[in-house]
Amino acid sequence: MPLEVLAIVKHDCPVCDQVLPPLDAAGVRLVSQSAPEDTAAQARRLNLSRVPEIDEELSLSERFDPDAVPAVVLLDDGVEVDRVEGLARDRIADLVARAGSTFVVDGLPESRPGCASRTRDPEIAAHIAARRARRDGRIVARELQIGGLTDPADELFERGMTDGLPVVPPTPERVVAMLEHTSRHPQDVVGIVPPYGRRATVEKVAINAVMAGCAGPELPIVLTALEAACREGFALQGVVATTGPAGPIVVVSGPYASQIGMNAMGNVLGQGNRPNMTIGRALQLTIRNVGGGTPQREDRATHGSPLKLGLAFPDRLDETSPWPGLAHSQLPDLRPDETGVTVFAGDGPTYFVDERVRDADVLATTLGAELGHGASSPGDVYTRDVMLILGGEYGAVVKAAGWSRERLQQELYERSHQAFTGPDRILIVYAGSDVGLFAMVFGGWVAGPTGSVPQSGSVEPWR
Image 1 (tube, rainbow, N blue to C red):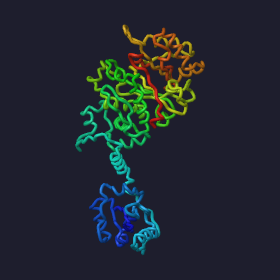
Image 2: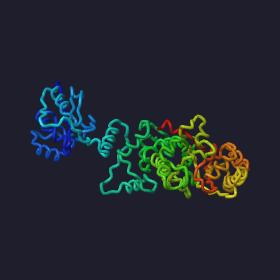
Image 3: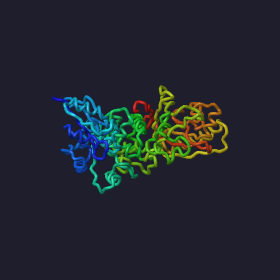
Image 4: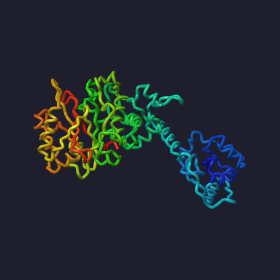
């Protein structure tokens, strides 16, 4: 089969206008990225002998993937052997000559940069990437067809797929863009999600991360959190179905948290920071939409709590921190330059303040008594864990005393009158601003063999 020349053009490119007449005269195959009516109008305007064929769904442009048009491609039995993008007069003439024809260069400038290919338009590029991912089996989830006059957020709510707040519609384009933030294959299984034991693939987690409003870099943290929450020891079945108000709390420890812009300072547990707000929500939406967990059905919470929406925050690991991150204390092999995630089944928080404290021993006494008092309800036969979040001023008190996390855990355990099964069941996190001698306490759901054990995992395998 002889060599063939293919030229990809578009109607609103002045450089294409310059090269189209001599390419037409040379008998080159002309393919337009533009709509049929625009392509026909261009052919009339330039007095071409034929109307360029239409690149349906930009399939040829996707195949050859030019940065710019005109893109003149030399093919040998359909396989590309050479190309020119933009106007390079003598090189185009050479390509056409190699295919046995003549490209008349009279009146053409020697060179001129082309115009961006339509495949470089962000919206079109996203559509092509989604189409390719579907074709390659990277995304397989069924697409919902929603009428053009229907609000997607309203429709998803009516179908029971949201937490009541508006969500970002998880279009294939958005999901594929989200998947670019992990090296894992979209069909890798992250975990088996109760109560119905359904498989959560990376793709399904990405769908829910889009809905939650995650920007993309948050995805590896959501994947890590879900993998940890699906471990048998976390008892996610019980956390979902309990009549208590429990929900997963996600603590992110390590440099990746700051790289994606998580807030470890003032209002660390509150609003105003995108990854802090969306990571926990993405985890909860995945649990709901993959495993099941509809309120008043599988989720039997008597009152529930804001934790049902989701909560995520990072350790504060600057120079003021008394210790390494929480996940590093749970995972001895996790390096300081790596990031880990800890998932804790918590109830609603309690506010603790003692503005007279200037000494670690006094802090341990007053805080230990508070923890012991709140460790269980009257008549409660279950043991519970607790998560203690120390603000900046309390962290400074502990650091000045030279106490390790383990020392503070032991002191709190003893002064709580051993209200916990061991000092390691008091999880301590350093986070929040430097203003105020404050701490926050999250009581845990049922602990031990009959309940939930906090789980930690490394983010690195999911990046």
